[in-house]
Image (cartoon, rainbow, N blue to C red; front, top):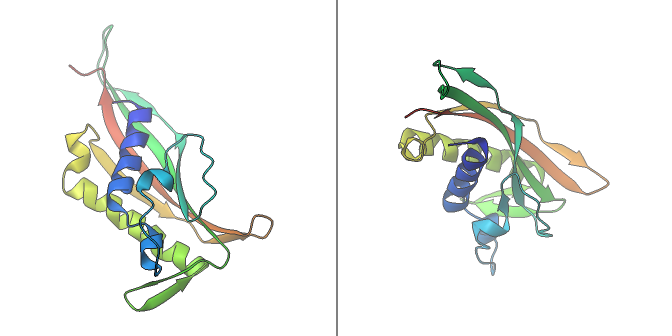
Length: 162
C-alpha cells in the first residue's frame, strides 16, 4: 500500500457507492463514478456536481529497525464537493438547492466512507485505519459560480512489513 493506492481506493469506494446526484433529476441517468468522482489526478470534466480527492499530508512513523524497516503511514485527504449555482435535487421529498445540496452530500460522503471501514472493505485492500476529521462549512465563489465544501479524512496503512 502507498499513498496513491490509498487515494485511489477511497476514490473507487466513492465511485462504487455514492449515488450520482443526477439520478435524482427527472430524465437524467447515472453518469458513472469515473465521470464525476476524481482522485488526486487532472481532469477536465465540465459537468457538476463533482468530487475531487486531494492529499493534504502523508506523515510516517517508523515501527521497526533494519534495512527493510516497517512504517505506519497516514494519508490526510480532503474530499472536495462542488456544484454550480442553481443546482437542485429532490431526495426523499426534500429539495436541496446549492449550499443545502453540498451540506447533504458531505454527510453522505462521510457516512459512505465510514460504512466501508465498518464493513472491513478498507481493511481487505490494506487500509488499516480510517477517521473522519472534519466537515467544512459550505462556501460560494461568485467568479466561478460554484458552491463547495470538504470532508477531511485520514487513512492509515503499513509499508515495508513482510
